[in-house]
Amino acid sequence: MTAVPTVPLAAGLDVSKIGFGGMALSHAYGDTDPEQALRTLHHAVDHGVTFIDTADVYGKPRDGSSGPAGTNEELIAKLLAERRAEVRIATKFGITGAVGGATATRGDRAYVRSACEASLRRLGTDVIDLYYLHRRQVDLPIEETVGAMAELVAEGKVRHLGLSEVTAGELQAAAAVHPIAAVQSEWSIWSRDVEAQVVPAARAVGAGFVPYSPLGRGFLTGALTPDRISGGMLRAEPRFVAHFDANQRVVALLREIGAEIGATAAQVALAWLWAQGEAFGLPVVPIPGTRSPARVTENAEALQVRLSTVQKARLDGAADLVEGDRRLTFTPQDWISADRE
Image (tube, rainbow, N blue to C red):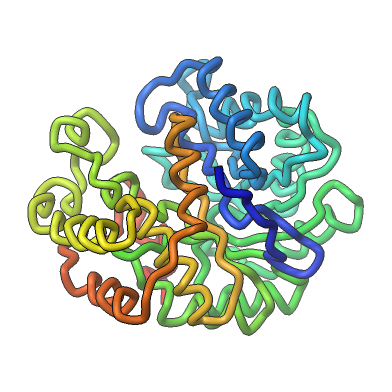
């Protein structure tokens, strides 16, 4: 097993160079066995993947109502109860409906404080290492939300602040209020819109970048089949359904290069992201999610993969092969940064 190094995501925030996306352990991709999910989390930490990402909205509301569920945070609390000192925990607030049907967001001071207190209780910890605004309330100045988040840092409830799916302008406005340690947005070999403005802005303000869905929600691994897609939340997404066959060209390229260097398609996709971070000059810490301990190991071993200049250039061209964009039909049109730029 590869020794996973730590990297400074931002000043004062050292994290494992690859993280773990906790959403995969909740219901978004189907029901899970909580005991198996906890074993997967322990396996990740055992092998040096100690940057764990969650959100207050991940999981199923117990009563079927909308609003933050928190069950993913409660699962991760079981890990923290035994291994808090080993883990850097990141969580998020701001989405006020369940993932898969959410349209509402809040970023007012009262909500910021209540959401943080609720996450601290569910996680069973007295401090959150990295607290993200999950999605901004677009009719409220982001400075107001970040100002309220900064109060949490001053009170010792939060160590560092992050923003998810913000534009470059929103990031710059937020950073003028309080240092931003990390930006989390979708970024992968087939989702690259953030490279135009958001990634350079992150570098300019001294924030690291945390790509979610670095493996294209599983598509880039080559493991997704039409049958698997038809039973999950991606069943209505054109990139995964109408353009499934065309987008296999990206998977074929990943596999081709993987065969040249003894790596899987997933490992090549992750290695490309780290190389892209080097090209842009900022720390990049992807957070692939999985329910399988074996996949945790496979993803961490991507740290050993080295791409040649020629291979990197070939992978850079994969964007030209992609059909369909990253917008998901179940989310609002302003849900991602590209829709507001």
